[in-house]
Length: 197
Image 1 (cartoon, one colour):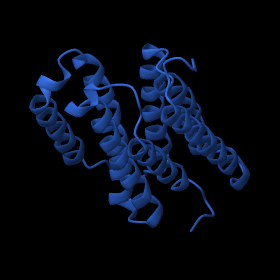
Image 2 (cartoon, rainbow, N blue to C red):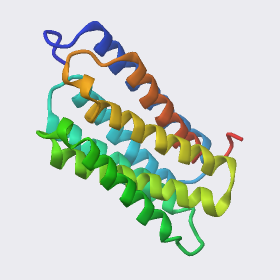
Image 3 (cartoon, rainbow, N blue to C red):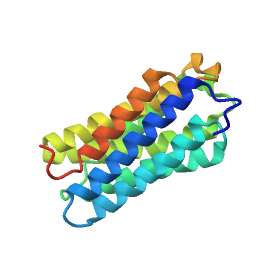
Image 4 (tube, one colour):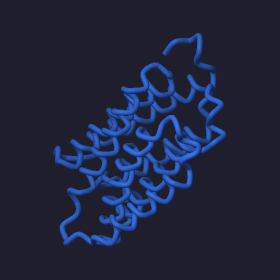
């Protein structure tokens, strides 16, 4: 990160994300006895989060930030799909797509220069919410509930950063945004740990 254009609060946010993500990676591999597909995909998602936080908070590479965040969403989705065994409830993705289209159209004036980015990342996040919701609806366990809440919170943080009109004053990453991102990340990862409950 270049010190010249990154403020103290932004650097602190970056270090918090770095420490938290590293701890979650260590927990993931330390508490799971074998490397299942779910563990591998969640580890890929955490590595994507590390790259995303470095490039987004450091405001260095927008494309790298975009692809790493999208990779994290897809990897977490694939980790949750490993736990779904029953037939898929198709009303859920249809409802999520309808909500996504309505939100996209409502906030179109605020994303005029980033329409494609918001649309693609929104689809990735809707896929994450779909997989977490599907898991929760089928299993109704505490783990799946944590996954659902984490996915919904991640979508809220994304919405705040990419769409909210006040975000046009770039510069500092707020502690509230960082705290929401970290809490969502913790819930997404902890829901996949076998011995946390």
